[in-house]
Each structure stands twice: as structure tokens, then as C-alpha cells.
Length: 330
Image (cartoon, rainbow, N blue to C red; front, side, top):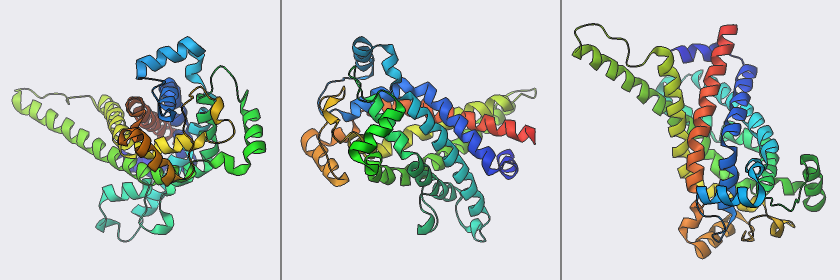
């Protein structure tokens, strides 16, 4: 009930600010894992093997700072993506709740629709799609910076923008957009939908444990967890579970997206030397299955999963805390 009340109080701007802060906080936590994940996804041969080995290889060959390559465009990406995503999501959810037939629609379905697939085709993928299209060039820049070796292809963010525009044109900033949109349509719906499911289940579990504790005791007991601890712990756990589940479902799209993002005249100059040439989305998928097997579609799955849990947990936790601050501010 508290959550519903806060959603009525907060404006779109406050939701956007909270989402942006949550996105940046998440990025700071998972940056090194992101660099490793990207390099594992791009390789078609075993240049990097496992998380620990990859950490050692990058630090040995490029230094510790290399684990934060691409961090600047990534911070901008997470800031704007988080702001757009949460703002549009909550606006769409409020709109859905205002529909005359909302009582006939399952609440989990509404969360899925607002996150990545809407009730009608004209509003499909509103939250995820809007955030993706607006911030996609930053995602591409993050990927290219993350896979640079000691030989710099791009020396700064402005030079990268200038160089890509001159050599590849405006379409160069949107390489891999199609698999990204294919990924984001179910991804945001699954993310927000499963977050709500896990959140509700954990609250019910805590209530059950507290009730059971009271029944077994002769004196009144405090809740299994305090109200404040419960809210924060449940937010962290439900966000982590939602992130891990979603990442597993959409992982093949992410692998194809990363490989398409680094296509172009600079493909042979990156730290990963076994990046295959690809063209369309279907061509990329077929080539991966043919040359690397189905497991190739899940390259980088382990660091991606390890990254997804803290990333989603921090995102939802910080977002919830920011909402509480705005609520107290009136």
C-alpha cells in the first residue's frame, strides 16, 4: 500500500531523477564485470577464459584501470537510460491503472506490459524501447571503449563520436540496434514483472515466518525482520533475482548485439582478436550456431549473471531509497 501511495505523490521528473541515480550507482558497482563480459561475448576463440583468468589477463596486459574502460559513456548511458526507463515505466503503469478494464487484467500482466510489452501494439515496449533508442549510441561507445587494448582507437569520448561519424556515418552509432530491440521488448517486461512477483513472494514469506514465530512463542514476537530491514532486504533480493532471471532469457540477443556493435573499419584493432565479421541479426545468429555451437550464444553468461544480480539489486534498492527521500520531501 505504501508503494501505491508513493507512486501517486511522485512526479515523472522525480521518478526520472531517482531512476538516473539508481542507474549510475549500479554502473559504478559492476563496471569491471561489464568489461569482462563484453570481451567474453565478442571472442569466437578462447582468448579469455573465465572471470578470474580474464581479470588477471586484463590487469597484467593493460593495468587495473582497464577494468573501467568505457566507464564515462557507460555512466551517461546508465544515467539517461535509468531516468527514461523508470519515468516511462511508472507513467505507463499509472495510465494502465486508470483504464476502465484494469480490474479484469492480472496485475503481473500490467507490470509486464508497462515494462516491455503493452496492452496494444501501438504502445509496445514503451519503457524499455524508449530508453534504448534514446541512449543507444552511448551503449555502442561503451562497448567499443571496453574492448580497446593498449593501442588506442579512440582517445576520448568526443574523438570517438567524431571518428565514428566520419568513417561510418550516423548509422554507425546504431549498429546492433535490431537485436537490442528484440531483446528489450521481453527484457523490460520480464524484469519489472518478475521483480514484482519476487517482491510479493518475499513479503508473504516474511509475514508467514513472523506469524509462525508468534504461534510457537508464548510471548508476542517482533516481526522476523524489522519493517525497515524487511523493505530494504526484500528490495535487494527481488531486484537481484529479477535481473538474473531476465539476463538468462535474453542472453543470446545480447551476444549478437555486442558483436554487431564493433563491426566496421576498426574491428581488427581491438584487444579481442577473434571477433567474427557479421552482417544482419539472422546472419549473426546462424554463424554463431554453425561455428561455435549453441553455447556460443551464451558466451559471457557467467559474468553476465554475476553482474546482473548486484546490478539489478543496487538499481531497485537505490531507486526505492530515492523515492522515499522524495516522498519525505513532500
